[in-house]
Image (cartoon, rainbow, N blue to C red; front, side):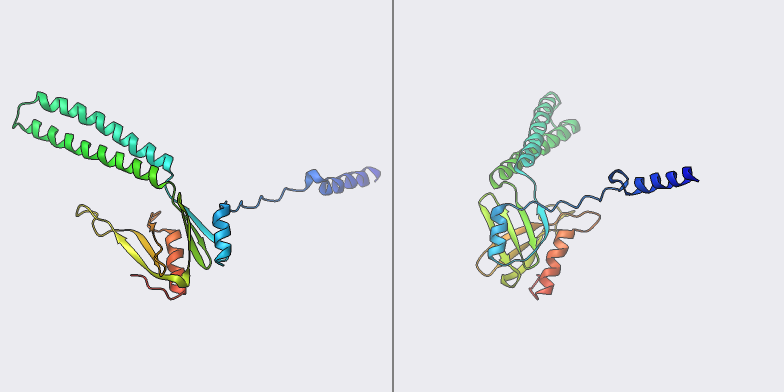
Length: 208
């Protein structure tokens, strides 16, 4: 009987000891907002932070753009050398010449992509309950929903296979503020843009 009581006492002590209490699940870490952005949003009364969209960083743009350009230039030189060794007006010469030009244009596009990313820096959008902040290297811009003139879809320009496809939305405000919100689809949807569109409709702002 005494052994039974001692066993119960040890069990109760184990259940109530700190080691026996399971740890609480860690809370989600809130998105870090730069002080300059947070201060501007508070001054404009944009309310609580809803979501954040970070664009391609300058480092990634340079790495991808100039890396693509380097590979394309190497292939351009290699194909150009092979083209010079094939008989003129032959099918092989025509194909190699076309590929050489294609890789050359790809190299130019890669260089431009890297330079543009380096100059523009990372573009980040901070979505708040009552507005949005667009932050670039030159500083943040805040727009409250009632100030929005319209949200206009931007369509792909280029070959016929992609022309007309929506690639983003340009937001314009009455004070001349204008910036692009890229459309990056995941499983056919873009949660960030969906929230922006919903806020525009909630505040009866035009979407064109």
